[in-house]
Length: 562
Ligand code: ARG
Image (cartoon, rainbow, N blue to C red; front, side, top):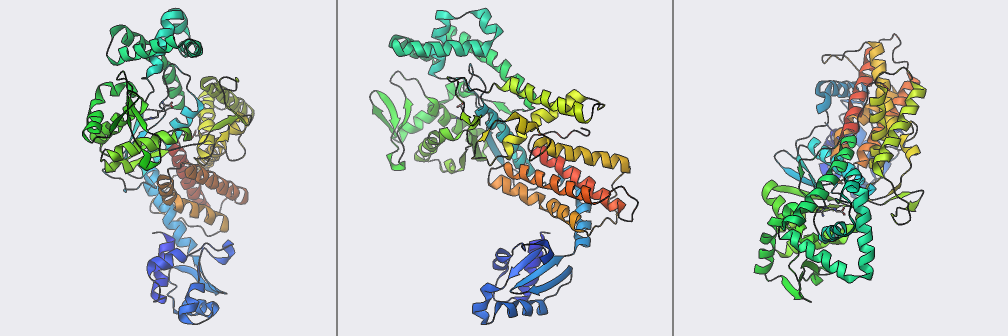
C-alpha cells in the first residue's frame, strides 16, 4: 500500500477532528531525510484545539499506535514518521521480483479504448521534426495508457488529401519528370510544389487549375487518382523507412483520403441542425459563440477542407472504436483548428466532443533559431538519425571496443538518444535540436540511463545472481532507501504521466532512478562478501527491471551490454 495512506490512516485514529482525506492532503515530505520520510504539520489544528501546534504534535505522538514504523517523533510543530525501511525494502523488492515487467501495471483503463492521432505527416513533403515529436510523444502516450490498462489505438492520419494535391498534379503535368521523382520522390515532389505555389502567385489561373484537379480527385477521376496514388505510394516508402528506424508501428493508417467517401454523414447532420450558412458561395459554421472564426466546411465548388475531413474522422472513430478519449498529438500551431473542430461537434450535439483532446507540443529550434525551409535552417530526419547512430558508435568504440553487436547497440543508443531528449522536455516546451547533447553519456540523456541499465546487467552477471521470490532481501542504509522510494513510486508516476499527457514525467523518473543507483554504486561495494550481498544484488536487479520498463514506455531500448 501507499505509505502516505498508511500514515494518514494511523493519524486518523489519533485526530478525530480531521477526516482521512484532509489528513492525507496535509502530509508533507520533510525538508531533509534525517527528519523522517513523511511529516504531518499540526498548525491547522491549533485553532480548533486551542493549543500550540508543538503541544498538539507531542499529543498526537503520545496517542499514536506506532507499530509498523521505525519511529515516530514530534519535532516542533511536526509529527515525523520514519518508515520501517527493513519491512518496506523487503516488500518492494519482492513485489518487483514477482511481477517483473508487470510491475506498475494498472487496471484503470480495462475495457476502454483511447485513440491516438499521431505522426500524421503530409505526403509529398518532408517528414518534419514536428512530425517526429508527434510520433514519439504519441507512441509514448500509447505505451503509458496501455500500462494504465487501456487499449491504445495508434492512428496515422496522413495528410494525403486536399487542394495541394490538385496543384501538385498540375505541376507534375507541366514540369514533372517520372524518373527524377522515382529516384528522389519527396524532394522532387516538394520542388514541384514550391514552384507551382510561386508561379501561382503571379498567375492565378494555375491556382484555378489546381482547384479543378482536386475537385476531379474528389470525384474519382481516373487520371487524377492514378497520379495521387503514385505520389502517396512513393512518399510512404520514405516514411516507412523512418518508422522502421524509429521502431514505430501503427494500428491504422487512415489518412485524410480515407474519409473521402465518409463525409456525407457529417454534412447531413450539419444541414439537419441548420448549422450551415452560406458565405460568398461557401458553406460555413458560425462559431461566434465560441469566440472562434467560422469553420469553412465546403467551398463553392463542393470541395471539402481539412476540418471537414476531421469532422468525418471524429465521427468514424467514435463509431468504430467507441473511444473514451480521442487524443490528437499535434503542434501548438494548430490549436485553433482543434478548438473549431470541437466546437462544431459540440454544436452538432455530440457531448463526446469533450473527450477530444489536442495534446500540443512546442517548437524545435536549431542553433537556437527557428527552423525554416526558406532560410535553409532545416533538419532532415533520416540523415540526422544516421548521424546520431554513428556518434553513438564512436563513443562505444572508445568505451568498449570489444563489445559484440556494436552496430545494433549503436542503433539503440543513437535513436534512443533522440527520442529520449524529445520526451524528457516538458511537453508544451520546445527544445534546441542538439545532437551532441542528445547522444552524450553524461547528463540527463537516454544513453546515461541505458548505461546505468547495462552496468547493472554486468554486475548481475558477475554476481551470478538469480532472484528468489521467497527471499529475505532487505536493506536499511540511506542510499538504498532512496532507490526503494523511487521503485515504490513507479505506478504513481505512470498514473501522473497519463493524467497530464506528459511522458517527460517518465523520462525524469528514469533519470532520477539511474542517478540514485549510480550514487549507491559509488558508495557500496555490491559484490563484496557480506550478509547483505544478496539484498544488494536484488536491489540492482529490481532497479534494472524498472529502468528497462521506464525506457520501454518511452519507446527506448535497453541494450544488455554497452
Ligand atoms: N497532417 C497534419 C500536419 O502535418 C497533421 C494532422 C493532424 N491530425 C488531424 N487529425 N488533423 O500538419
